[in-house]
Image (tube, rainbow, N blue to C red):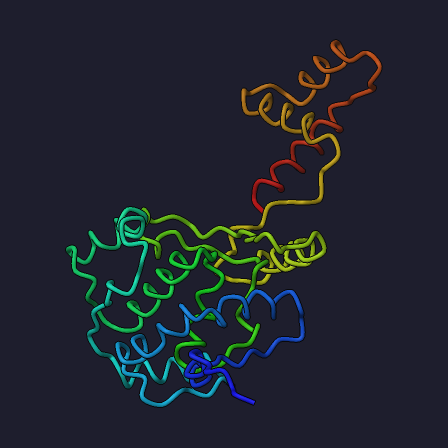
Length: 261
């Protein structure tokens, strides 16, 4: 029997190993990394970033950081391999402007930038960036850093924005489920309690009874009124309440204490 020639056989040399126990994540990763168009980019990408030997997938962050330290090289992105250049230049205008119109800079910034360009080229959201980096550098990916649904602290200053305090956000994707969002919400709440860089996220979440009344009395006291006068005025307007000067005094002291927390 004559065997039909397989003109895609060469792609086997670039096949990306995928490690994930979750079918939905496995599918998302496979449907990008098995695209012949993506696999055909790998030779160019690895040459651009001087990846002669693939990095181990285990301890990926440590391995990639070590690689960056040993390979702090200037690289230039080959834009000719992208088919969406007009859209890329429009969407990444600030990126090109920053580089003076020439996409040349150093690792790791340029690899991160290129992985974002790849997301744009293949119509994938930003949470694919780490997985694409793994595919390029390791020839394998896992779902450790592939988070379609994730609570994160966002530093807008690092994004080039005016200096602001970090905020906590929950990023979602079309595959996010309600249960996943609830789990990330719990993580976000924990981050605000335990992350020292988010220490300003410490509002009182336990509601003080009569908080509106306490605040009103506090400001009446600031005006110089006596506790008795404040109590008398309150009773005149709220005949159903038996308010004494001691009630007002305790409430004002309570509110002052809240202001110091």
